[in-house]
Image (cartoon, rainbow, N blue to C red; front, side, top):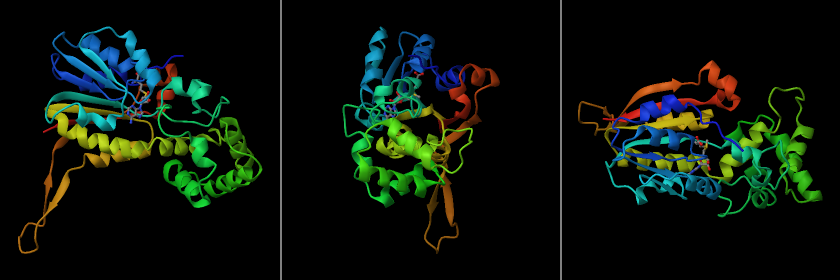
Length: 297
Ligand SMILES: C[S@@+](CC[C@H](N)C(=O)[O-])C[C@H]1O[C@@H](n2cnc3c(N)ncnc32)[C@H](O)[C@@H]1O
């Protein structure tokens, strides 16, 4: 199983400002970006990569480079490993790997039948099936709206509750089929289960909170002049990233003539970078990627 790294040249080019520096790849996956970064750095530099997925960390054992290390931990734990102003660049390539989608046993895909799991770290917490068989109507509907923007959320939630009365929902194909059956628009470019699967995956991995927590830590541990590069795959991620780096407004008491000033910690040095036509042809999964780069002032 292969994963093609997205925006590989562009992201690594922006990330590295000092060939002897210290770097973090927050999302190792199958090491596409990590290997590229290592190939550019000098032997005085270092790269620490993170991945929640034990299988990704197992793959990282193939990299024999004394300046490389892998942490089987969430990128929301950066501050346990790094101190303030100590790192030259931090990369995020968010979302799932193709390897997750192709491995039926991980339960991410509506194309392959497998257990309804969807956890990045399948050794921690509970699979999606545990939650979906006991969650309330309102909770399921809320997830479909909030993380999937699924306009047929009510129909899908009702179909899930109806199915649960007959049998437990344990597999990806049970969920995909019930969504397909209740979906009013039959001929769509996207599979009817696309948005729901995205929503449940974001929820079960608490993805948006983890990104926000991690960016808070990243913005402190990156040095002045250091860069944070983020590749997002949907608007929830991209909006979170964009808004996170907006200058924070500082308010003053009413009797001071200035109302607010902006506290600008980062400069956005590249925004809305998208894959070329060639890259999309070679790797269709890259089509929704969008990259932003921020430099600490
Ligand atoms: C798109 S893949 C990265 C692919 C990688 N850049 C490559 O070229 O092979 C995203 C990876 O991030 C991991 N991941 C998702 N959320 C994470 C988190 N909160 N902490 C650490 N890793 C996470 C997933 O397990 C997945 O392997």
